[in-house]
Length: 260
Length: 260
Picture 1: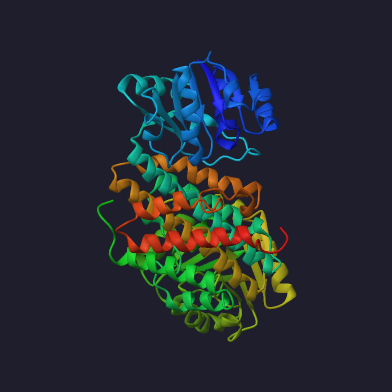
Picture 2: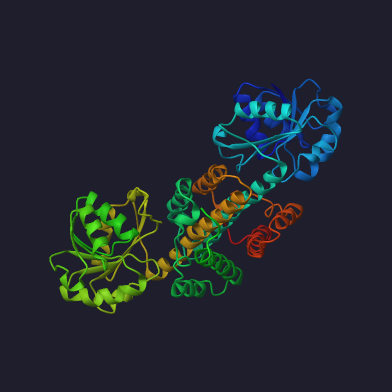
């Protein structure tokens, strides 16, 4: 397919590269900052522009990967070309595009991307949604050229996925940072924790999290939990986090939710 | 070395197997439940007992891997044999053994173990501490036969590590469980989140957590955070967790801690 990429952030960069590798032609890359557009465009053999008015109509699909609150404004300009328009946002409804055109869809990669780190895009779950079944089928086909994990997901379910992603990615990463800081305060290196972080993630690839919960809270080991709170003596916010998450684990253990 | 294992839990099981594989002789395995002792003993070619009084004196080291509050009671019985006694606990001071004997040490594996899951013990960080430099050297040597990551760590620092482990293992696993439950409530499978969980852990193997923080909180994207809280409408505890962790990420971003 001929593809136009609107945006030059982490998602745009990784998705454009995957599409290029899959044999699609990236026609043009747009970014408000021409240097960013130029860098990505160079990488995927496309033209660069920082002018929405200069976007070429000779393409099959516009993939919009910009900040959520900027999507509608871009769609408004692109509809004139009467081509399929999709966004890549987890938190944004399909209706944000559909308010302007029925040639609308979503291509949401459920992964965390950094420009500095390679990702095997074929492992990335891609959630597609189309304004009608033809578009959905078309997006499934496109998605399957770059990912082995393609799901059809409604806007409502995609929002749940996006929320769940915060719980399994953004929040754990924040907790990794707390631990790194605790160790640094005692002149210990973060390296010591890396095998534990990997193993914790690895475990739930095979078993449900509830089945492999370990630590003082799941044992309701008050002595250890009190000792931990003592160690966090001067850090009220960390004590609060420790207490709230421990209470959650204890409660889970006493009244486990549904059948699993 | 000739080694006696006191305990038959996850740590005892994995450490005994690693020691056996490294060519040490496991003399005896003790557990309060003879079936548990027998199962591990069979696995590592040792004798089994459920009687502390029946523990054989012909050994070089007693490795105690029982619940923290049971350690002292076991030490009291074992001192009569006048052999080196170590425990494997992160949260327990060396002094818990030293109160009874100076032939004391610690061998703490900084990893999460389940009996059902194999672990490459050579990747497990092993924290050693001896009551004197001779014992420390001896434990370093022993540890190096089963792990490529041996650290000498004081009791005070080990407690910090144990606390940090809660933040990078027990708490993230609890958050994985919350996400799994959210998806289940909307008839979506946990499989969709697994690549994201792995990538999040993978990222901090190479970069510090603060450098790779993503999500609505680090962007201070109030619209998305409010939408997420709305989705957690009926789940007060999850709203509380969401708010507290998001506030932490926002605060981190505004006033980053020390040089990193």
